[in-house]
Structure formats: structure tokens, C-alpha cells
Length: 594
Image 1 (cartoon, rainbow, N blue to C red):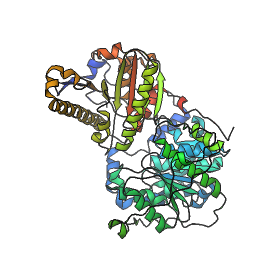
Image 2: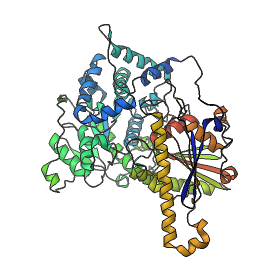
Image 3: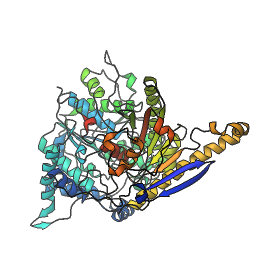
Image 4: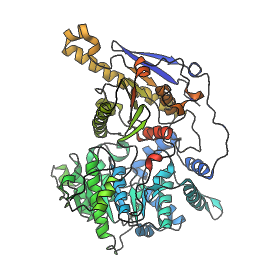
């Protein structure tokens, strides 16, 4: 049922927040939105069945409370589901896996890694999460998402085998666990040369950690995320991320924030694997090849270096493993921090050796495609800047990139520019942390909405998330908006206090956003329709009639519209589902070195 309040229009007037509530009937006269009956394709039927594996909000909350006591069962359960597909844990060794954990940059590192190996002529499998537009993006062959037909075929093959045993229907794995098992099934049947596997959450108890014998593992930059599951200190989080380390399997990581490296190094020593920190990109021998990355953003440099080390080691080690390693025993015992860590003693892992970068490595980095991260999409007079930053550090990097990109675009264009922030953050992430870096960037408008494309969720849609309560979604948007307005008000008061004589006569110049609008919409499509104001004709429909909401004059008069979409990768995916539904931004570059 749609949330009763569809839109809140908020204006800062003299530092005071004034809210106007507009009812659904005032907005469009449409009342509830009904999804018309239609014939579902095999793919849509598969997505509908997959969405049924999502847990509701109450079940998820219960699972979070019991996470610490039941986490160790995750890997055993995954192994059990694999066995029902006639796949043993040992069979996964054939995939020559590269396993990657971390807080930030996991997906980008895996994308670089897959691209490099594909350029070396190898058939690649790549499993990642979450998806942006379609669930089939999570499982890729040679860098391409499975086609709808292929996804549906493999899905029902796996689903049918897991659903029944001895003529009886069995309890099914949850959404992420099902896709993990399906990915292994697909990669084995497709006979890939290498599988790049991105950890879901954490590492130690993540269901992807059913892998017992990867070829090489990597840990990207660590930070504070999922603290309710992984722990409330960087040391505890690092311990979880190091859970993918395996005996005698080489591991690489990047320079880390204080407290993380000693834990990673100590854990590597305890397990019996080598751990090296990757060097800066400029230390590699690039010959005549330019250092160009297919994924923009300065922070991608260290992810690319990690990918270089992972792929170089994989190419060197792929045929050297013969010794059988023990299967995780599932005892559930979490390793404790070593005593000397508590006493302040710090280990420093050695630095990995940079090497000569050949054309295959260079082209793999340059032609890598990974949407939703530092991505720019131009649609007529509207430019979308998309980055799924969801930690404080990631947001700092996002805003630096956004500022540079906007400056470059404004050099190429003429006329006035209207700048919009489209934001959402969910879960246990703090809006204060993510919004703080954005307050001084002179946005003309801040728009908040849930991570859903339509008001009504379609059970056959890739974008539908049934794990969250609709009212809670809107409540979170209101919280985000209030935090934003409070921050702007505080900045204004500080500037007035610092220079009262200026504020007396020039209060309008104290802060560019002093009477800025903040708008909450119930879904992404409504937000984009209203912002478009006729610029995007494909958005026009009966769902986009906001006649009672007078847009800012600057928005109507602007020659260029710049929209930064950030705070959640799911929000970014929802926007892409509207402006690029066919996933054209994920076009392939090279398959098998061709």
C-alpha cells in the first residue's frame, strides 16, 4: 500500500524549516497505482520466484539479532545446497577462483581483475553484488551479464533441483545464498578458466567463503560498514575480512586506515599465507602504455594496483596447486585478536613488487566497464553523475570527483546550470556522515526518495526489494532530509556569527543554499519526472503530473541540469533502470582477447 504522504516540500526560511504536506490526490489525482496484468516471460517468472526468496523485514531483524550465534552455519548451509546440485566443495577448486573482500572498492577491483584476465584470452566468470538494474548482472561470463534466456534456463534448473528431495518440497536458500550457489553452478557448467568472486558481507562467515582453495585472495580498503554484523571497531571488521585467507594461498591488500593492517598481517601469519601490500600505480613499469583506467576517479588507482597483483599472481600460480586443503569445520569459533595487538604492537606486511605492465594488462585496465561508480551519463541537457558512495571516505572521494567533472562540463557548455543532489541512505548508515561532505557544494535543490523505481513493487521486477517496510523507507527519507536541513542551518548560523556585519546587509550571500528547496518523493521515477520538467520526453506519463508543485524558477530557466545521485548503490541502480533500462552502459569491450 502506498505511503500516505507522497511528497514533502521543505524550504529553509531564515534558518527555519517549513513543511507543506501534499496528498496523493492533490499530486496526480491517481490514488493508488495498479500494475496492469500482463503475460510474464520466462525471465520475469524466474525473477518473481527469486524475489520470493527475499526475507521480510521482521525475519531480517531476527536474523540480525541472531547473527553472532548462527553466522558459522552460513558456510555449512551453502555447502549443503551445493551438494543438492551434485557439486562438492572440492569441485569449486576447478574454477581457479580469485576471492575478494573489503569495504570499499570490491566491485571495481573485481571488474579490473576480470577485464585483465579476459584480455589475456581467458574465459571468465564474475560474481558480484548488488546488481544495479537486473539480477542477471550478478553472474557474468566474459564480462557480460547472462542473457535473460540463459539466466532463466539456469535459474529453473537450479531452483527445481533445490526445491525437491524425495518428492517433497524443501526449504529454499535465501536470495543471496541462492544466487551464490547458482553462480558456482553456472561457472562449472560454462567451464570458465577463472572465476572472480566478490564477497557479499564480511568474509569469514559470508556464504562465498565455502571456497576452500582459491588461487589468490585480495582485501580492498576497509572502513566502517555493516557494523551491526561485523563489529564496531576497524580491528573487528578487519578480522572478518581476513576470514577469506587460506593456508598457503597468496593474499594481497591495499594501504589501510590505522588499525587494519596489523590485524590482517597477524591473521595471515596464523593461517599460514603470505600477505603483501600493493604498491602505488606509478611504481609499475608502464613502457609506452598510458596509465588510463576504464573506471574514473582517483581512488580507483589503488584498486587497479590490487587487480594487477591479483592477476599477475593468478597467471603465475594457476597450475601449481595440488595439495588438498581442509574444508572449513563450521565450529563457529571466531578468531580473537592477538594479545600483542592489544598492547599496541603493529606488524607491517611487506610491499608487493611492481612489474612491467604489458599491453594485455594495460588494455584490461583501460577498457574495464563498471557502471554506477564515478559514472557520467549525458541525456540531452541533463547530466547524471552516479556514484554509489555509502561510507564517509567514499563520499569524500565522490564529491571531489563530482566537483572536477562539473567544472569540466561547465567549460564546454554555455548558459545557466541548475545543480541537484538526489540522495538516499539506508540501514545502519548515518546520514550525518554521508551528507556532511556535500553541504558546501552549492546544490540548488536536494531531493530525497527511497530506493525503488515505482511506488508499487512488482514481484517480477529486478528492482523490487521486499525486505524493507514501505513506511520505514519514507521515514528514513524524512530523517535524511531533516539532517540535511539542520546542517545547512548550522552552517548559516556559523557564518553569521563569524561575520555579523556582512549578514546584516548581505544575508543572501552568506550561503548559496539559504532558501533552497528540499523535496521528498515516494519513488525514483516520480523524482526524475518532476526534475525533468519536460527535458526527458521518455519520462512523460500519467505518473508525472505534479501540477500543484511549483518548481523553482532557476530549474525552469536553466540551460543545463546536473544531478548527483549518491548515498546508495541501490539508488544509483534505480536511476539507471529509468534512464538506461537495457543496460547499454554495460557494453562489452573485449572477449577472449579479441
